[in-house]
Length: 255
Image (cartoon, rainbow, N blue to C red; front, top):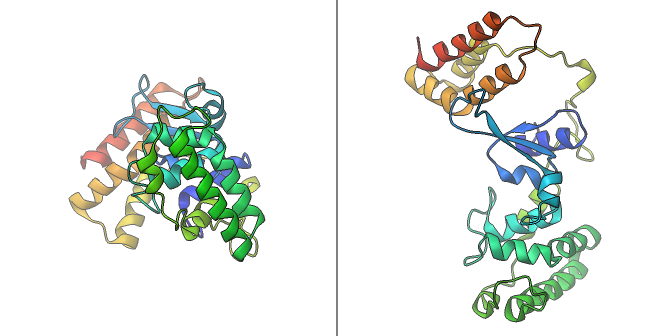
Protein backbone atom coordinates (compact mmCIF):
# COMPACT_ATOMS: atom_id res chain seq x y z
CA UNK A 1 0.00 0.00 0.00
CA UNK A 2 1.38 3.45 -0.87
CA UNK A 3 -0.24 4.91 2.27
CA UNK A 4 -2.27 3.53 5.17
CA UNK A 5 -2.96 -0.19 4.82
CA UNK A 6 -6.49 0.30 6.19
CA UNK A 7 -7.25 2.88 3.51
CA UNK A 8 -5.97 0.60 0.73
CA UNK A 9 -7.97 -2.36 2.03
CA UNK A 10 -11.07 -0.20 2.44
CA UNK A 11 -10.91 0.85 -1.20
CA UNK A 12 -10.46 -2.76 -2.29
CA UNK A 13 -13.43 -3.77 -0.14
CA UNK A 14 -15.51 -0.89 -1.49
CA UNK A 15 -14.85 -2.06 -5.05
CA UNK A 16 -15.65 -5.71 -4.16
CA UNK A 17 -12.08 -6.88 -4.71
CA UNK A 18 -11.99 -8.39 -1.22
CA UNK A 19 -14.87 -9.64 0.94
CA UNK A 20 -13.88 -7.94 4.16
CA UNK A 21 -11.09 -6.60 6.36
CA UNK A 22 -9.73 -8.16 9.53
CA UNK A 23 -9.01 -5.27 11.88
CA UNK A 24 -9.89 -3.75 15.23
CA UNK A 25 -9.61 -0.22 13.81
CA UNK A 26 -13.05 1.32 13.33
CA UNK A 27 -11.53 4.16 11.28
CA UNK A 28 -11.52 1.76 8.35
CA UNK A 29 -15.22 2.50 7.80
CA UNK A 30 -14.38 6.19 7.36
CA UNK A 31 -12.12 5.15 4.48
CA UNK A 32 -15.03 3.38 2.79
CA UNK A 33 -14.90 -0.20 4.10
CA UNK A 34 -18.09 -2.22 3.71
CA UNK A 35 -17.40 -5.26 5.92
CA UNK A 36 -15.07 -5.70 8.89
CA UNK A 37 -14.17 -8.80 10.90
CA UNK A 38 -13.14 -7.93 14.46
CA UNK A 39 -11.42 -10.96 15.95
CA UNK A 40 -12.04 -11.98 19.54
CA UNK A 41 -8.93 -13.00 21.41
CA UNK A 42 -5.50 -13.85 20.08
CA UNK A 43 -6.68 -17.02 18.32
CA UNK A 44 -10.35 -17.35 17.35
CA UNK A 45 -12.30 -20.54 17.86
CA UNK A 46 -14.88 -21.92 15.49
CA UNK A 47 -17.72 -21.08 17.90
CA UNK A 48 -16.46 -17.66 18.93
CA UNK A 49 -14.54 -16.56 15.88
CA UNK A 50 -15.25 -12.88 15.34
CA UNK A 51 -17.70 -10.04 15.29
CA UNK A 52 -18.80 -9.01 11.81
CA UNK A 53 -19.69 -5.38 11.17
CA UNK A 54 -21.07 -4.08 7.90
CA UNK A 55 -21.54 -0.49 6.81
CA UNK A 56 -25.11 -1.33 5.87
CA UNK A 57 -25.93 -2.51 9.40
CA UNK A 58 -24.26 0.57 10.90
CA UNK A 59 -26.40 2.77 8.65
CA UNK A 60 -29.69 0.96 9.34
CA UNK A 61 -29.48 -0.09 13.01
CA UNK A 62 -31.78 2.23 14.95
CA UNK A 63 -29.47 3.01 17.85
CA UNK A 64 -26.52 3.68 15.50
CA UNK A 65 -27.73 5.00 12.12
CA UNK A 66 -24.40 6.41 10.95
CA UNK A 67 -23.33 6.68 7.33
CA UNK A 68 -19.76 7.28 6.16
CA UNK A 69 -20.12 11.06 6.56
CA UNK A 70 -21.40 10.62 10.10
CA UNK A 71 -18.56 8.25 10.96
CA UNK A 72 -16.12 10.81 9.56
CA UNK A 73 -17.51 13.47 11.91
CA UNK A 74 -17.36 11.04 14.84
CA UNK A 75 -13.70 10.30 14.09
CA UNK A 76 -12.91 14.02 14.18
CA UNK A 77 -14.90 14.66 17.35
CA UNK A 78 -13.88 11.57 19.31
CA UNK A 79 -10.34 11.23 18.04
CA UNK A 80 -8.76 8.52 15.94
CA UNK A 81 -5.45 7.38 14.54
CA UNK A 82 -4.51 10.84 13.26
CA UNK A 83 -5.73 12.78 16.30
CA UNK A 84 -6.17 10.65 19.43
CA UNK A 85 -7.69 13.51 21.43
CA UNK A 86 -10.51 14.93 19.31
CA UNK A 87 -12.70 17.47 21.13
CA UNK A 88 -12.43 17.14 24.89
CA UNK A 89 -15.80 16.48 26.47
CA UNK A 90 -17.40 14.94 23.39
CA UNK A 91 -18.45 11.34 23.94
CA UNK A 92 -20.02 8.80 21.57
CA UNK A 93 -23.59 9.86 22.35
CA UNK A 94 -22.93 13.53 21.56
CA UNK A 95 -20.92 12.71 18.44
CA UNK A 96 -23.67 10.42 17.14
CA UNK A 97 -26.35 13.04 17.86
CA UNK A 98 -24.45 15.70 15.92
CA UNK A 99 -23.90 13.29 13.04
CA UNK A 100 -27.60 12.41 13.03
CA UNK A 101 -28.39 16.12 12.84
CA UNK A 102 -26.51 16.26 9.52
CA UNK A 103 -23.30 17.97 10.56
CA UNK A 104 -21.15 15.20 9.08
CA UNK A 105 -22.90 15.41 5.72
CA UNK A 106 -22.66 19.20 5.66
CA UNK A 107 -18.98 19.14 6.58
CA UNK A 108 -18.09 16.66 3.84
CA UNK A 109 -20.03 18.73 1.29
CA UNK A 110 -18.07 21.85 2.28
CA UNK A 111 -14.70 20.11 2.10
CA UNK A 112 -15.52 18.45 -1.22
CA UNK A 113 -17.00 21.47 -2.99
CA UNK A 114 -14.95 24.48 -1.89
CA UNK A 115 -11.33 25.55 -1.50
CA UNK A 116 -9.30 28.39 -0.03
CA UNK A 117 -11.12 31.45 1.39
CA UNK A 118 -14.50 30.13 0.28
CA UNK A 119 -13.95 26.90 2.20
CA UNK A 120 -12.79 28.84 5.28
CA UNK A 121 -15.93 30.98 5.16
CA UNK A 122 -18.23 27.96 4.87
CA UNK A 123 -16.37 26.18 7.68
CA UNK A 124 -16.80 29.20 9.97
CA UNK A 125 -20.55 29.10 9.33
CA UNK A 126 -20.59 25.35 9.91
CA UNK A 127 -18.74 25.73 13.24
CA UNK A 128 -21.17 28.41 14.40
CA UNK A 129 -24.09 26.15 13.53
CA UNK A 130 -22.42 23.30 15.42
CA UNK A 131 -21.93 25.50 18.48
CA UNK A 132 -25.52 26.70 18.31
CA UNK A 133 -26.76 23.12 18.16
CA UNK A 134 -24.75 22.28 21.27
CA UNK A 135 -26.10 25.36 23.05
CA UNK A 136 -29.75 24.99 22.10
CA UNK A 137 -30.27 21.35 21.05
CA UNK A 138 -32.60 22.65 18.35
CA UNK A 139 -32.75 19.26 16.61
CA UNK A 140 -33.71 17.53 19.86
CA UNK A 141 -31.14 14.80 19.29
CA UNK A 142 -28.90 15.64 22.25
CA UNK A 143 -29.83 14.43 25.73
CA UNK A 144 -29.49 18.00 26.94
CA UNK A 145 -28.01 21.33 25.94
CA UNK A 146 -24.21 21.57 26.07
CA UNK A 147 -23.38 25.30 26.39
CA UNK A 148 -19.91 24.76 27.88
CA UNK A 149 -18.98 22.29 25.19
CA UNK A 150 -20.15 24.78 22.57
CA UNK A 151 -17.61 27.26 23.91
CA UNK A 152 -14.86 24.64 23.71
CA UNK A 153 -15.16 24.11 19.94
CA UNK A 154 -12.01 25.85 18.64
CA UNK A 155 -11.87 27.97 15.51
CA UNK A 156 -9.33 25.50 14.14
CA UNK A 157 -11.82 22.61 14.14
CA UNK A 158 -11.69 20.57 12.05
CA UNK A 159 -7.99 20.41 11.25
CA UNK A 160 -7.92 20.35 7.46
CA UNK A 161 -4.83 18.16 7.25
CA UNK A 162 -6.46 15.48 9.38
CA UNK A 163 -9.75 15.76 7.49
CA UNK A 164 -7.86 15.29 4.23
CA UNK A 165 -6.19 12.12 5.50
CA UNK A 166 -9.64 10.62 6.05
CA UNK A 167 -11.38 11.93 2.94
CA UNK A 168 -8.54 11.62 0.44
CA UNK A 169 -6.13 8.95 1.70
CA UNK A 170 -3.27 7.91 -0.54
CA UNK A 171 -4.11 4.58 -2.16
CA UNK A 172 -3.28 2.82 -5.40
CA UNK A 173 -6.52 4.34 -6.75
CA UNK A 174 -5.51 7.92 -5.96
CA UNK A 175 -5.43 10.25 -9.00
CA UNK A 176 -1.92 10.54 -10.35
CA UNK A 177 -0.57 7.62 -8.32
CA UNK A 178 2.43 6.05 -10.03
CA UNK A 179 3.23 2.56 -8.87
CA UNK A 180 1.90 -0.95 -8.61
CA UNK A 181 -1.88 -1.17 -8.90
CA UNK A 182 -3.45 -4.40 -7.58
CA UNK A 183 -4.96 -6.60 -10.26
CA UNK A 184 -7.44 -8.99 -8.59
CA UNK A 185 -7.83 -11.02 -11.79
CA UNK A 186 -4.29 -12.31 -11.27
CA UNK A 187 -4.83 -13.37 -7.66
CA UNK A 188 -4.84 -17.07 -6.87
CA UNK A 189 -6.38 -18.21 -3.57
CA UNK A 190 -3.87 -20.04 -1.42
CA UNK A 191 -3.08 -20.64 2.21
CA UNK A 192 -0.51 -18.34 3.82
CA UNK A 193 2.94 -19.80 4.38
CA UNK A 194 3.63 -19.39 8.08
CA UNK A 195 7.30 -20.27 7.75
CA UNK A 196 7.86 -17.77 4.94
CA UNK A 197 6.05 -15.04 6.88
CA UNK A 198 8.24 -15.63 9.93
CA UNK A 199 11.39 -15.67 7.79
CA UNK A 200 10.36 -12.44 6.03
CA UNK A 201 9.85 -10.63 9.35
CA UNK A 202 13.19 -11.90 10.64
CA UNK A 203 15.06 -10.64 7.58
CA UNK A 204 13.19 -7.40 6.90
CA UNK A 205 12.50 -6.23 10.46
CA UNK A 206 15.24 -7.96 12.42
CA UNK A 207 12.75 -9.76 14.66
CA UNK A 208 14.15 -12.87 16.32
CA UNK A 209 13.42 -15.30 19.13
CA UNK A 210 10.74 -14.44 21.67
CA UNK A 211 10.35 -10.93 20.25
CA UNK A 212 9.51 -12.38 16.83
CA UNK A 213 6.97 -14.78 18.33
CA UNK A 214 5.34 -12.00 20.35
CA UNK A 215 5.02 -9.73 17.33
CA UNK A 216 3.57 -12.49 15.18
CA UNK A 217 1.26 -13.63 17.97
CA UNK A 218 -0.19 -10.13 18.38
CA UNK A 219 -0.30 -9.02 14.76
CA UNK A 220 -0.33 -12.00 12.42
CA UNK A 221 -1.61 -15.22 13.98
CA UNK A 222 -5.23 -14.06 14.56
CA UNK A 223 -5.63 -13.26 10.87
CA UNK A 224 -3.95 -16.48 9.78
CA UNK A 225 -6.12 -18.56 12.13
CA UNK A 226 -9.23 -16.79 10.87
CA UNK A 227 -8.17 -17.49 7.29
CA UNK A 228 -7.64 -21.18 8.03
CA UNK A 229 -10.93 -21.61 9.87
CA UNK A 230 -13.05 -19.67 7.39
CA UNK A 231 -11.58 -21.48 4.38
CA UNK A 232 -12.57 -24.98 5.49
CA UNK A 233 -14.79 -26.65 2.90
CA UNK A 234 -16.78 -29.84 3.04
CA UNK A 235 -14.46 -31.51 0.54
CA UNK A 236 -11.34 -30.85 2.62
CA UNK A 237 -10.26 -33.50 5.08
CA UNK A 238 -10.62 -32.45 8.69
CA UNK A 239 -7.17 -33.91 9.25
CA UNK A 240 -5.74 -31.46 6.71
CA UNK A 241 -7.35 -28.58 8.59
CA UNK A 242 -6.20 -29.81 12.01
CA UNK A 243 -2.64 -30.22 10.76
CA UNK A 244 -2.62 -26.62 9.53
CA UNK A 245 -4.01 -25.33 12.81
CA UNK A 246 -1.44 -27.34 14.77
CA UNK A 247 1.28 -25.79 12.64
CA UNK A 248 -0.03 -22.37 13.62
CA UNK A 249 0.03 -23.24 17.31
CA UNK A 250 3.53 -24.69 16.97
CA UNK A 251 4.84 -21.45 15.49
CA UNK A 252 2.92 -19.37 18.01
CA UNK A 253 4.39 -21.10 21.03
CA UNK A 254 7.75 -21.92 19.48
CA UNK A 255 7.20 -25.67 19.64
